[in-house]
Length: 322
Image (cartoon, rainbow, N blue to C red; front, side, top):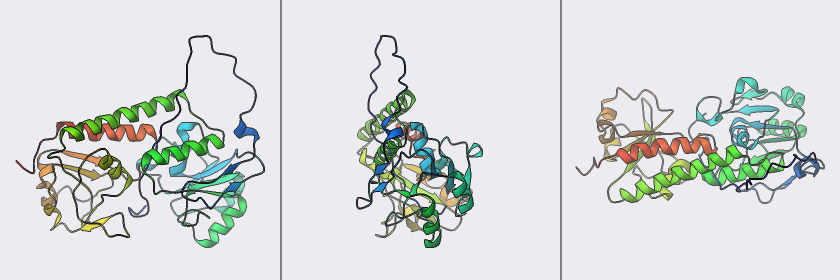
């Protein structure tokens, strides 16, 4: 998927489960509210849109990113589609075991109908009527099978996870001990980032970039970078156009944005042998981490990445001012 197609974002605080010392009660056989009540949902970011069913939503088809985000809360779709089969966007999904409606821009209306979904969930277009990358004809045909629940992708990671969790609760999912531990791991990882940001505030600079053979793109507004910036870290790079989350910079000019640490996008390619890359201060100093704006919106995925970044930052030295 093109780097400009998707903005990263993600994560909220789940409720704490009280665990007593007394023996566990016999599990109730009563169905949960989500299994008995009609479905009604107003998606964040689409406040003028409310999706309603006269029955519970049980069978769902989702884009890959949404399937990965819903998985920790116990939601298993009856079909998946869209971008994200490669890289971190699929999270812990085993796509080989799932019913694939279509990868990337491909989409089978026949497979969708055969899956008999109650809802279709995925990143929403501007008015929330369908998937971002469907054309009008496919949108009309797909939503004739089942209502579309749009997910806005303009939020930070904590907000994204919060929204997915709320949606999961409406379709039969919920918090569990594993999800709560993953949230705690995320919180601890963020504390590491905040601590190193405070300790290095006077000198540490970071360049987030995606490299290719012909050009370089940087960003200071995508969700992962904003998450780190709000924790106190300082980023450098060219000014971004107002209508884009990315700024393009030539190989000849990238050295103008010296930084102590480089965050190299996981999809970068054909850059390793470029002498300009090899001579960046952070590369010469071995202070290189990774990022990926399409990482799955899960506590565990973000905790893992944040700890990787913290490892680099905690060992970093002042290279630009030395």
